[in-house]
Amino acid sequence: MGPESREFGSFGSVSSLTLGGGGIGQVWGSTTREEAIATVKMALDEGINHFDLAPMYGRGEAERVIGLAFSGVGLSDIKFTTKCLLGNVPPTEVYDSLNRSLTRSLDLMRLERIDLFLLHSQLVEVDFLFDSRVENASRFMVPLNFFFESVIPAFERLQSEGKIGGWGFGLGHPQALDRAIKHDIKPSAVQCVINPLNSAGGMARFFPGFNPNQVLKNCLEHNISVLGIRALQAGALTSGFDRDLPQDDPDQNDFDRAKSFRELAKDLGESPAFLSYRYALSVPGVSSIILGVKNREELTEALKAASKPPLLPEEMVRITKSFATTL
Image 1 (cartoon, rainbow, N blue to C red):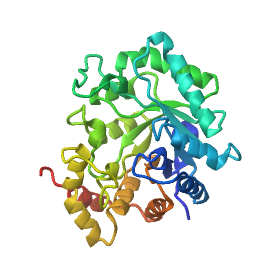
Image 2 (cartoon, rainbow, N blue to C red):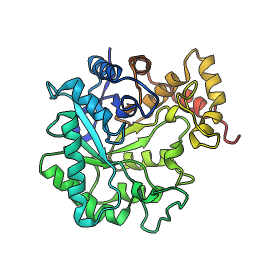
Image 3 (tube, helix red, strand yellow):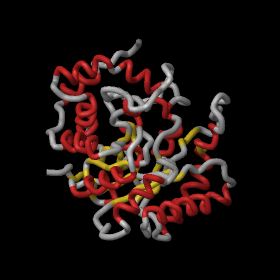
Image 4 (cartoon, rainbow, N blue to C red):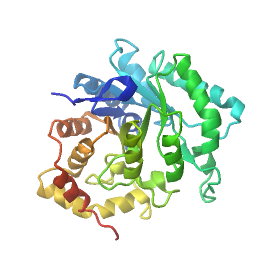
């Protein structure tokens, strides 16, 4: 029995697990192209019908793997998402930038259209001050007024042209996300961080106090479909990292906070990753959890977690209370 089917707004339904491109694009440790292709095919065989990609995942490698795995054949029941990191472009060039990125992605994946096109840049308030310590930080962020006035119309044009089925966004400054969710023109879906730590780790390094649970709450209140990301919080909710991190890295800090969580998982006879997947899959209102697996072994663990019944509310509270608030 594969992952259950869940409602996914205007897209109909989707499997509760989505295969993401981070793992097969070698963002989360090394794998081979052959293993990545085998993982994609296994996901489909096991009932996963949504694949979430981005050009940034291995500089196109994740999208290339999809193209090689499927060759554009027999994809009528499969949904695909990809993204665009917009960067600093003049308002008059937004559509061309998005369309150019989309065209490259479609070519790599051997598709004629995608279901969901997401802004990979983070949304920020107009007066947001970029961190001067981070080189080119501004190219990863899009001011909210620019998003409303230039990006949304470009997304809507791509949708009217039949190149995409819908559009959305993910992370950003809390107030900016709140306003974007409440805007008159609603996104088709939003990617929200869903994990028992309630942490986006390094992805929210510019936004102290970022609260993923509040973003989820806002989306559900406005009937916006949610795709869960960071179920394992970049490896912080596993038995150990598959890459080296500096001691002051936010993800390393989350791993240190999760020591008692790892002990709880051991007491329950489960791996930390398995328990994290179960938690994410049990959060109400989430259409699908995006996996960052890079091989069939990791995918198997997620599939087994999806075969378990949802955690009870008291079990979820016990898990969230296992994390250290300070170190």
